[in-house]
Amino acid sequence: MVMHLIKLCVGVKEIEQLESWRTQEILARRAAGEPEVIAHVTRMMPTRKDEIEAGGSLYWVINGAVQCRSEIIALEQVQGEDGIKRCAIIMSPELIRTAPSPKRPFQGWRYLKPEDAPRDLSAPGEGGEGLSDELRARLMEIGAW
Image (tube, rainbow, N blue to C red; front, side, top):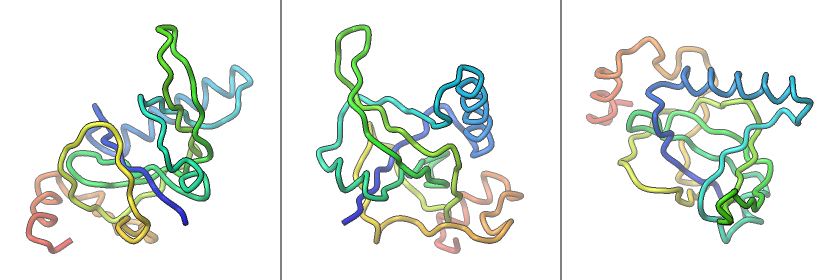
């Protein structure tokens, strides 16, 4: 069975910010001759590692809603200069937009069952990119989106 992760995208207010950061990261890796993947380091290693690596994604909460996901390639244990062991979430560089789904703040990451994950968006404009943050939030609040 596949399992996903969900995490707050701290400091990011819109998907375009995350896309820009990821593009810069890929260009830097390419210039250094490193694999073109995105790595995000977090404190805890998921105990359900095999299920996540079997096709899971990291769903990003941006501005109070799940808005996109990144396919997880691997979970690797890394050790920082401080000697603390952490988990590097290795992801594909592409972001897949999802139907916005409201999510309250939480710390760290959480497991996300496939049946609870928001669906992928398939058509341009389906995610309401042209809407203001206030209107998008209000539509989610009243359940119209």
